[in-house]
Length: 170
Image 1 (cartoon, helix red, strand yellow):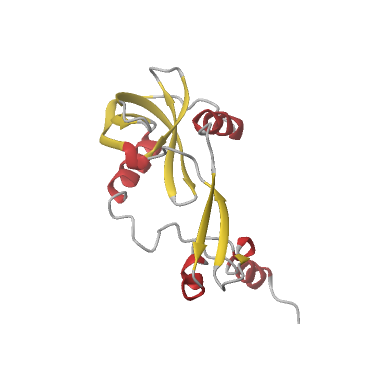
Image 2 (spheres, rainbow, N blue to C red; image 1 turned 90 degrees about the horizontal axis):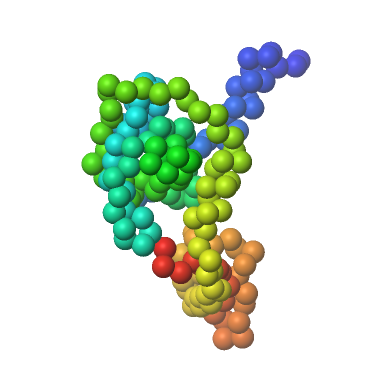
């Protein structure tokens, strides 16, 4: 007997569970995420202080577009009124967030291409290759962070991983 439409839907939707919270928790980000979610619902501008990767501090007023989880980091894609362009803001670098309840905005069209353009501007120019060596007894710990396919066995029983990492990223 074939499953009903509802049963088939349940079977397909229960195959994958996506949990955005890391094992170490996101308690420090939860208030920011809640505030940004509220602002997104209200089409409200948000004011905040932002510290960029170089340590420069700026006041920003933005029109929110979307929240992005990339790897283990949360970002806000927003239209920056000062720069008159879409920008990516790392949530960990944002503080003193305030919803501007007096001003709302009409959401601008932003495609995935805007995100890609914004991301490519923020990519570091120097991305050196790093060699990491793990003893065999620590391999299971390294497997939590690196794809098992990149492990190279060494003659002494240890393991080598070649990985690229950007320099000077906070």
